[in-house]
Image 1 (cartoon, rainbow, N blue to C red):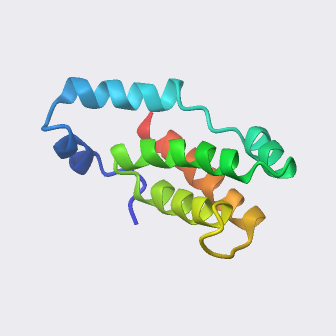
Image 2: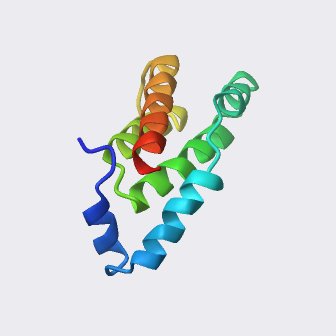
Length: 107
């Protein structure tokens, strides 16, 4: 599974290099995915809000063809929404690992 598929992301924006650059910059500067925020939402029992928080980052990952982050985000979101069972701490660890890896690759 790819961390970042630049060619596919470029194709999604009709080969518009400027638009892709804007999306990448937005991901790096505006999409803040912070573990304490997510863990606090979960600790307060705000699973819908936690799922929405995960969903936003997963959506950004989808737009940029970051397959690993998209997959780990979907897995965590599904558990938070009660669609399936799973180990929430392990899924959080995986998603944050994938998020950090995506950041390091896309810079």
